[in-house]
Image (cartoon, rainbow, N blue to C red; front, side, top):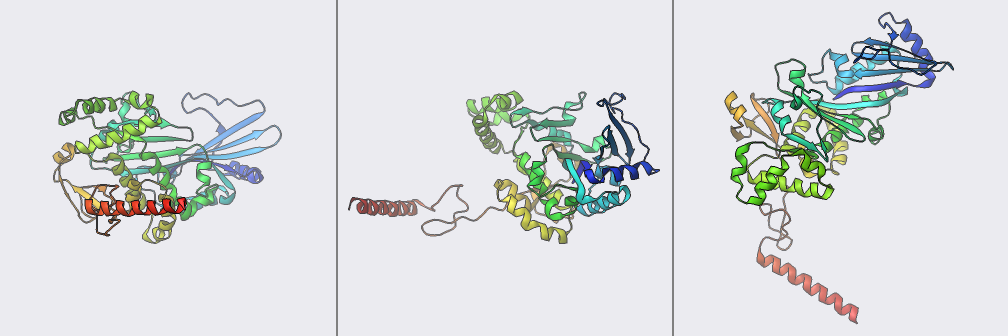
Length: 411
């Protein structure tokens, strides 16, 4: 839920907090050094910097010649609270740990401002996250970078103006025997959080403000270009121009060089060709995984009060993202071999059954004929009438109405 965070103590409390930290026997302050090079961090003349590491958090005290003191905390709340960050970190656990943090280190949550923030979630898959990460080729007009040069597909990261999106194999990184995909968004510009009413540490204890943060994760999903590299797929396409396009879509350079309109058209064509090849909508699946896992971080009682607030924000997003909170359809696998080959039967089952991979499917909205009001949900999207007869009748009425208006104007 909430992983990395950067906090700053209010100016009027920094002197008091600094004294308490320095007097705390569990906090050993030393000259700040770089974790990468082990060199003393460069500081301006007249600036004295000390830091202490406690339970994975870095407490830093900066003193200036004019007597001003700055106190800050940075690190992973999840890892500091539980000793690891691969398990689920619920909203209730977040509330408890923030209270402990404030009591132990003399913080006033309403006066401790947030200057850095990461929303993250660990998704449990039935197959290796590496298979999914290999299919992620681009984000908007940028290619993915990697922090692991030996295995570039292990971690996919892209930096945009206001945030950093990161996806990686959390199970392998944490050395646990689970298929975990970490999906996180580190927010650099705090104005993004202000629209959710989040400014200080106390705001993270308010479910009405924390629950809608799922929107920030879901917003990024539709911009990821996910491409299946199976070489046998191209043989299923009959037209040469479709084959050429399918091959072009595999290159990150294609998405980087394209302008906004070209990318939008290519995105629609990629979806159309994927449907023709019988491939699932990977972006919708990812949204559904995120939505399902996010829901597990809240109790039913908490969620009952948050849902109306979340729906207000979801109305602004695309229909596939709205579907995150609808019907559950599960894919059942009978053996590990079927998991590897992507086979298996589809059926609706109880949420508690084992060996399932969750793929949520939206409930289609019912649509009705504009003339006779019969159900046309089975017809293609955009259809307004059930038959040619109703379409002609509607057209005739519209034509008659136009003639009447024209006569009135002429008179």
